[in-house]
Image 1: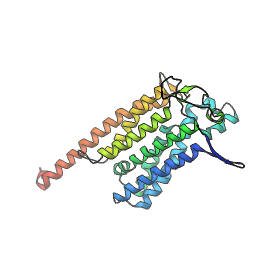
Image 2 (image 1 turned 90 degrees about the vertical axis):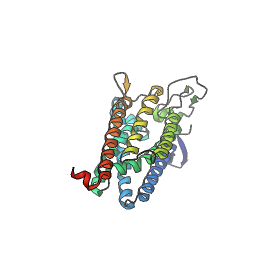
Image 3 (image 1 turned 30 degrees about the vertical axis):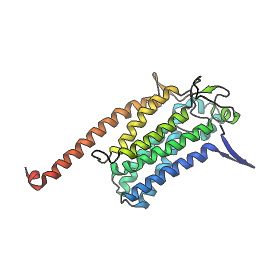
Image 4 (image 1 turned 60 degrees about the horizontal axis):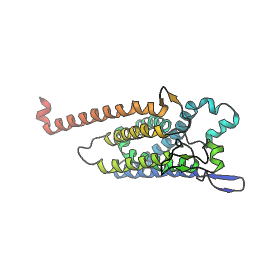
Length: 271
């Protein structure tokens, strides 16, 4: 693909950086727009979004450093490649979630409702961000002979992130981008169907992402750490998927109980 978008003298503009910035801005735009439509304070939500973006950047790089510690600490040159590498999405998601909880309490915004409002924005940002991975050549797939395989030829990709050149690979970046697109559509279509309750959209996002990431990881060819027979991201998925199901069941049951009590009125509550 094209890791380097263009060069202007000593300044090099990388495709990944441009698309990553676009991913964060689009995700923030959609989240703030949905929050304002829901009646939340737009300035507080924007402030929250900026802190979440910072945490996501730091968390993604941090987890990448942890899972590939030996590689990035082997030399000064390898350490500086960390800045050009994409990062681990789960690291960004976890750091952003913790920061989000703190900021929500600070600004006194509703936890699960805010999560529901931002979840489609996260999916949108993920979809665009993975296109940046495709352009950079990072997060590449295993060698394959499938008809839709892609072959990287730009030496900059090999130098920056170790992408194998002239070898047909699974387009795992496109798999993940398409997964983000499908998750986005599903969330927007079903969020008002059935009996909506606070937290449903957010945990549906977590569940769908965990399942899709677990499956796509089998086609990844880059070194990203391993725990037993699974990658680091798969192990996190194995925790988040059942947790999502438990949270959906618990929040749904709690919402149904609250609705029953409200329908009973004062007389029902006195019983």
